[in-house]
Image (cartoon, rainbow, N blue to C red; front, top):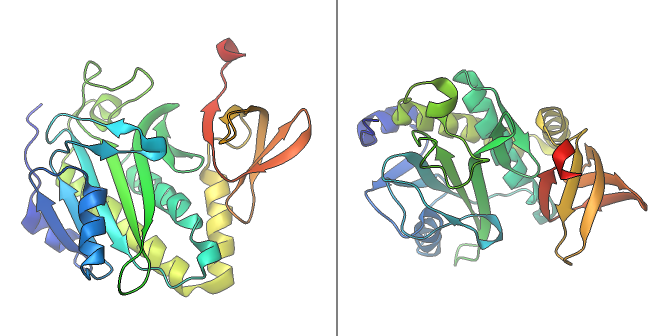
Length: 263
């Protein structure tokens, strides 16, 4: 793998509505973007790192990749939609990333709430954090995409990369440009469209979510696992699981797609 650096000049032309800052190294792009937001950074700042020393994912999992082998970035957003709609932001992000990758020829799908998979293997991790700033609350949307990792470099056997799935190392600058453009378009439509945009997002997400229709095990915050079949994603973005005690709407939890060998 050649693993060239990102082309900052091309990124500026591919995502003209955004302010893209490329760092050679960062502890965590979410941490840097959160600091920028607290210092007054406007909506649309994107912090990209060629490598991270302390990347974090959901449930405080760490994210380690070789330099320039992944796309590691965070976007500062300042949503004006009602606070009750903010939980949709991680789902919107996952849907946007999967659509962008589909447009580049990858068979990507969304695992609830916001992982992106190819053939049931994890390709993308997403972490959205709310940050309180002097200018009001902001959302920091962190995304990590495995780009050129080899099978030996993957963090777990159930992960994958674009190079593995596509058979060649893709142009990271082009991939990042496509993902950012798709995310901005979806976010702007969600912000401006009111209830109808919310309905369209919910419908599109449910159609793209590969978790719906699967038998799942949900590791609940209480520590008690929930076993059942995922039947839908409701209007609040929660996963509805039909189990032994009826239907349960899950707003938070770690979901495992159950295979025959897991039962």
